[in-house]
Length: 210
Image (cartoon, rainbow, N blue to C red; front, side, top):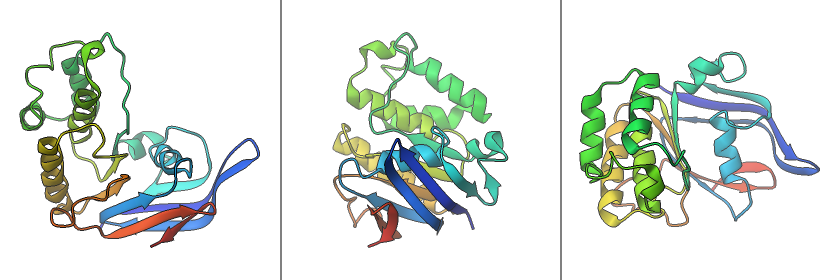
């Protein structure tokens, strides 16, 4: 069983405390993180993905970000709400980079490209991508390779219904393999397509079960 745990977490910007709690732990499943704008959803995701400094401990299956940063980061994928990539790269350049660092095969990546209808654009420079194409590219990269934790920030923003259906199918498939999904969305996922394991709301620097 895959486990994500946060212990003695403390994160603040200047005098503003964003998070301060002793322990939060989830196992395999899909968890929706809610909170008002500015509550800290993206900050939480960036802490867990190892993108910003914090005090405390974050671990996936007892592999800690603090002590084993490379091994820890290899266990997760993070698709940002509004991804930004170097504009001079092509979609294929970025995908090849992810395949290289994940030591993943091309077959699954090609299937993802086809599923998201991105085949005609992967040779193009990212500078010419729309926001929807950028989001699809970030999802293709996120689902490349074998990881235990998927972080999907505003998972349905800027993509069309066909792409959302592909995303639901991917989530259900990987969930059967015992993975963890942390998601945020202003629009709750379709309950007939995927079932949430839990909903947490950020309130008073805590993650509270709804």
